[in-house]
Image (tube, rainbow over the protein chains, first blue to last red):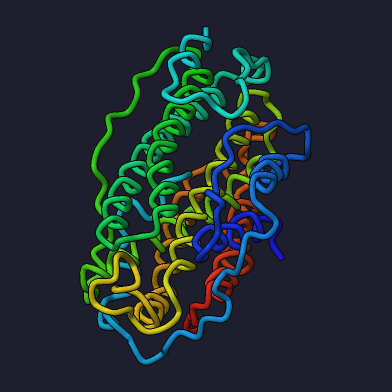
Length: 84
Length: 267
């Protein structure tokens, strides 16, 4: 599993789950950890351990296929990738 | 180059204080410094674009009646991107050894997603910008951070990584907030009216093309970066950057959709 999976997906989904009181934001932190892990440790620390369900029991339908006639990939605007 | 005034002028303080001087930057060859100054100046422009994208997504989340926690995270992300632009501009100035102009903000164009109605398009913008782009961005920045030894670069990349993680959470939180069942009754106060299984299925059907389009953009941008990277200055060799993107899709994005209960068709 990717080392960021819990920090991004699990805790992110927990923020949106009904009944969760966590905000998903960590205001301050400090750590001397390894590159790439210290910031995440800070974020984890702000999340309650009982953050709640994440919707994994959802069974979405499969019969709605909107917009399949749109050419794939040709309508991605500037905002799709803006981080580099 | 005196960085302290630029640091004092940031629109929001970073989580940790930034160094006001970086001897590792001073020690670089002039042509490498100029190259990195151009790269970070371009990133400053891109970060302002990301802020514009998040600002648009915020208004769309309001239109969807999104969960207040999602609104709060997304609104903060829009502000974060301004801070990122300032931090990238700071790095550009540090590498250039001179004060450069901040790029001019502009409103970015969001994908049209022909065939989607306004509601679905809004969901797709959240998914494309946050679940896919920002999740890949977090993994990319993490890979860059492993090659960041220059103190100022490392401090700024650490700040970026922490923020990218939160920006990616916007989308996953939003999807998790959409109830898995059928739409709620008319008059329901927020998302449930427009949510439920049909929305999840409609979004899922678009995910493969969103991923493909997004990854293509990342590959294009990485192709413009130094092939051998810039050791110590947060740019790994190009194959490593590309691998970080591929791994993010395989180990974060696709499992992420499964985690929040979206049945994404095979790519």
